Length: 297
Length: 296
Image 1 (cartoon, chains in turn red, cyan):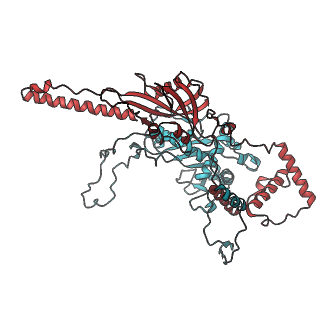
Image 2: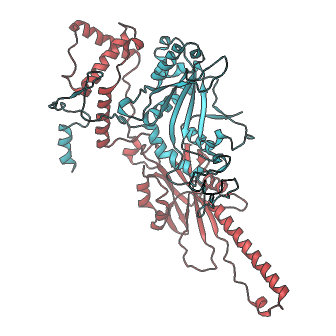
């Protein structure tokens, strides 16, 4: 999107130049030439900006969000209303009478009703104690045969408790972003993977190439779209019109599989971090330009 | 803080409720059914967190905004008015609605500029089926109605939501000699929105599509197709499932034998995209929910 903007500006500039030339030509035809106009030196053009691309490599959430206590209470209240208002369930349509599956459904349904409306809500069942015990035993056996009761995996990964920031399994409910620790010209800094744009390369192609150059090719990634999603202009040590402006274009990418393998001596470390953790590691100036790109979830 | 909260939480559970308050006022009786009617309107809303909706908000929405973003500097120029209108100065037409000849030509208009509000989203999923035998005998619609009911669980104004239309009977509009007459029931349709929509989408993507042998994905039209056809500017992605595919829905799988005959159905994913290229954006959204597409 931004590249298109710049091209449009360029086109407008050229048009205006053509137009001035045309009027000058018209003026030259009608009037004698003014010698002073030719002698004034043209103002020096600012040097071309130095372009880089940077890739915000994201690991999307792999776990659902835990509802807040308010949401939990709201959901269970709504579930209770829903249970109270639902249409009658067509037992005959779904179960043959007297089957084990029907018995299981009835037992589970009574349990759910008790949970929703309290123990006093349901009338007593008109079955003998032996029958009830036999039913329960049969249903338990069925559950064992079907392999129910498997323990779910915990929602907190060992890498969370160990504080391992290199694992892709950490903080499953959040968006994680790849940050590299680099030492360039004697300065240590955390930043996203970054590289320069070579000549005759589109920005999104350059982004892909730069990602491979810094993070290795041992991962499957996908760059979202062809347009950059943000821009960063690093502070220049001394502002002079002679110096080329530096511009970094951000691209979003997703990691599907694999892991980062830093390439080159200038990268000392990498980390998969949430938005809040990134704020503590990067410069203030850098943070101001990336904070609105990163997700709060 | 947590020290103070903990005992309160243990005393009042968040998910269990105490005994309902005793009803002191006399409840009105519904004149038709004779059942007591509460004094307030009770509406059943979302009762569980919705995984696919979360996925849309945390991952898909950002990506789709970046992929479909169209950069526009300043305000778009007013389109040239080349189509004829009645003379607006004429006293007869001065204060009348004066559309251009040939309609609004919405299929030739570019889509609206990208804003955070019009990022593409799924509005509804429509399931639709036509039963040919119902033309001769309308009771043939009953299996289709039961099948839709089992698939979606929707009922008319279900849960007190007045906008929920449940399972609707589709009636013929035209008269075709020797076949159908206007106003005879020929089909069934359901509109799914919100949580029900995402639940259905999840079932479709995880249980049904992977188990279909002859389904590689929704077939994309050839690249030579005009981008200005009504279907490609309305932001809807449609495909159909044959009768044998319905067996794979868990809601039907449990008692397939109870249905005398399963009927296939059309599935329409309706999005909020309009204008040129709307269908492509809709495909990008739907493929984000892992519905595959293939090229012929």
